[in-house]
Image (cartoon, rainbow, N blue to C red; front, side, top):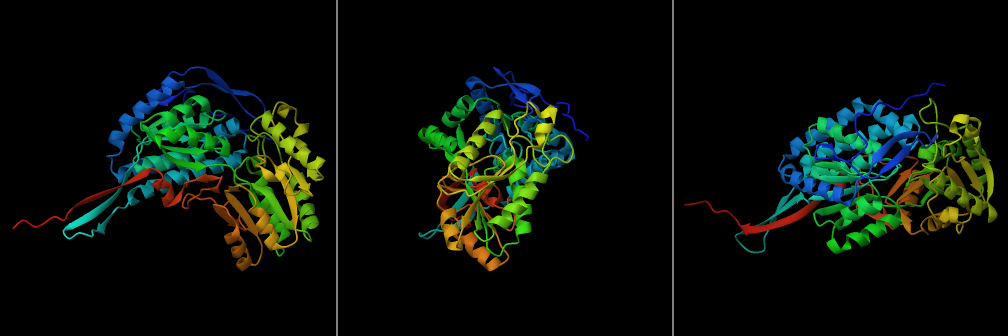
Amino acid sequence: MSMKTLPDFWFEPRPWMDGQWHPGGETVTIRNPATGEKIAEVSRADAATVALAIEGAVKAQRTWREVSAVERGMVLKRTAALLLARKDEFARLLTAEQGKPYAQAAGEVEYAASFFQWFGEEARRVYGRIAAHPEAGREFFIEHKPAGVAGLITPWNFPLAQGAKKVAAALAAGCSAVWKPAELTPLIALAMGPLMREAGLPDGVLQIVPGRGSVVGAVLAEHPAVRVLSLTGSTATGSALMVAAAPGIKRLSLELGGNAPFIVLPDADLDFVAEQLTRLKLFVSGQVCVTANRVFVHADAEAALAEKLAVKISAARLGNGLADGIEAGPLIHRQACTEVGALVEQAVAAGAEIVAENRSYESDATLRDGSFFPPTLLIGVRDKMRVAQQEIFGPVIPLLRYTSVTDAVRRANETPYGLASYVYGRDLTQCRAVASAIEAGIVGVNEWRPLKAEIPFGGIKQSGIGAEGGEEGLREFLETQVISMPKPIIAS
């Protein structure tokens, strides 16, 4: 089996500020979660460094906001082109740092590039308007302007794509940005600094400050010059950020946790469902906020679907994502394995049954220090079990039996979360009716990956506020100003 290698670094593992590498403070070791091997020592930013980064972003934003929308868009589109030209290097770095298989990492690079391309075009579509005034001889001008410095906080599961969503939108709007990557996956973010400089981004417009959330996140939330905060993370982290940012009344865009239902309608093609659901749950080893967390299947179809899923799960190729043909990699760290394992153990103790699991990675001695968890299929899961109440964030498929579609929809909505959902069936009229009844920001009908740069994505209920992608993603970084003034009169 051939094995790809970690690329030579074209960046330094420390803060990127004002177009150069800045000294950091304490260091943290980044390891490949598949093998436990050390990749790099990254210097973290302390509070003073973050404050300097914000000051640099404030200065840069004064000029960047005056750059034409067309020129800003060209920088973003050049970034997209450079990303695609170096897809292999970025994908290998992403796999080594995060653990996902190379093919998935390459797909993430392409997905990230699509946001730079989309917002590169969308930058020129910030339209104002003139509105009628109730008083004669006057008129309203309604304009949308850059909000100011944006603080961007991204997660470890999609460290490049989630950064691209936020960075591209903020810069397209004319904002400068201070990007705090996840503590576990800072390298792929740091790699973007010199690449965007090569694309023509002026120094200081994008500052990248790796560090602890309790330090970097706190400064971003409290600093008066930061006008917008955009976070992808857990609901608990989002709630804490709202509290921290409240005194400054900052604009917030939050994409938070989920508990996605996957409803298999009685007429669904079970072979298609098994293939799609397995792909969804093996994608990033289930460490995705929009992955299926509760699979509702009709009682008459449960046994047949379980049998087909068991075959798919057992045949999946697990291992180091840098090896060819791998379908699922490790979890992000050993603690994640412990947490997912506890959910499975609790479910089994409460009456659920494990009908399939894949431990093929155990035969590979090179993975002994990795953080692997076996893809697992559970039947007999009930709504009140913890595995059905919270995000699993692992390759576990829990099947929940239902007897009527109305009952399945009701139970699917009995959660404080509303991020994503999935509906599978042959009757598209029924699928559409069920999708409309689901309380979620996005619903995939017979599709396991509905997210695209062209559409807005965001949660409802405790899954977040605001949107990323689409024209709505740009609005998160714009403020509206109304100018009321006399109509001009032709001089006599």
